[in-house]
Amino acid sequence: MYPPKHHQDFNPENIKEVARVYPFATIISAKGKTPFITHAPLIFHEEKLVGHIDRNNPHIQLLKDDYPVIAVFQGPQTYISPSIYTTKQLPTWNYIVSHATGVTKEINDPAIIKESMVIMTEYLEAPDQNFVLNINDPRMDRLVPYIHCFEIEIQNWEGKFKLSQDKIPADIENAKLELIKSNQKSIADFVNGLFEKHF
Image (cartoon, rainbow, N blue to C red; front, side):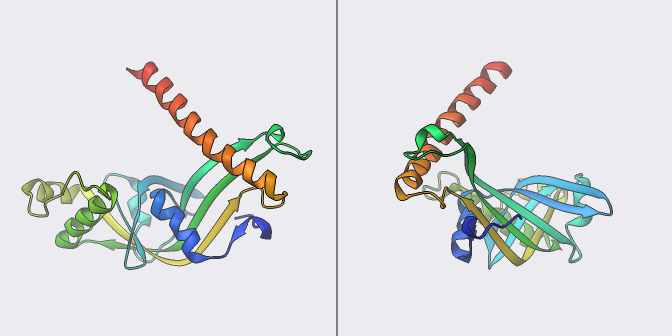
């Protein structure tokens, strides 16, 4: 990750928090000159990241055997117009991104796979826990053969939080408010438009 110092975050807990709040990751591996990219949720379990993908996904050949991988967690991001600043500035883009670099290990034990699915569901259902996944549900046993479960042992975290840190306090505050406002509006407009086209 291109790392201008004033846009980096060096606090591991801040960086991990992006992954906790935005667990839907972009998982990247490479075999020779061929990249493999999969999008899937990853959750923490004992300081490792755990995920599940379809066993038909060709990426599974690289998500085992201590193979190197990068997981990218994308937080909020938006265009920042100079019009929101109190000083003269140029246009820019603010964003929050965390990268986890590590190695992968395949999990084959059906009991551990089912347990990891229960733990992931509990995490994603929090805080209200409207649905509880029963580990003894017979449908789980039918599903396990179609799932590739893996964990990532993390070797390094990087955080790039481009948040107008090089501006005066008033402009930093305006950029923060724009990041919040823009994400709320753009998500609603995009999703509503997408559903209108498809449904």
